[in-house]
Amino acid sequence: MFVQISTDNQIKSDADANARLEDRVRAKLKRFSDRLSHVSVHVADVNGTKGGDSDKRVSLEARANGHAPVAVHADAARIDIAVTAAADKAARALTHALEKQKAH
Image (tube, rainbow, N blue to C red; front, side):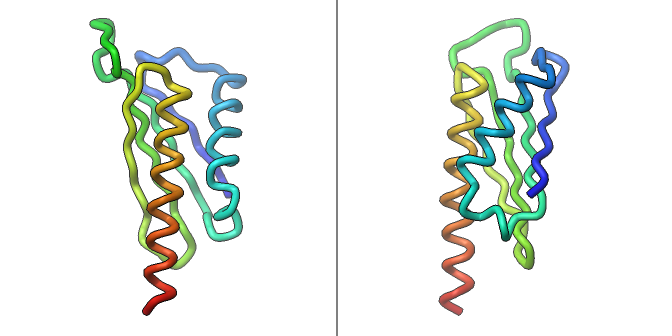
């Protein structure tokens, strides 16, 4: 499973921060690792320099082999919380999509 982290120009990012976010995503989606080919994570600051309570948005797209991509979004005040929430949503969506395919 390849995990790609990208940020907008309002987010300060470095290799260590990206590695921590990647580890968080991998941990949350570990049970799907053999079925996922690519996970894209985009972190954005919605309000920019204006600030705000829940102004960090994480968009996560998971591509499972043989399935349509699953895309989710999560907003939070901190990036790590938003990434965790998006990964949790993606895990639920993947579980649903894979169970739905088994039923057919």
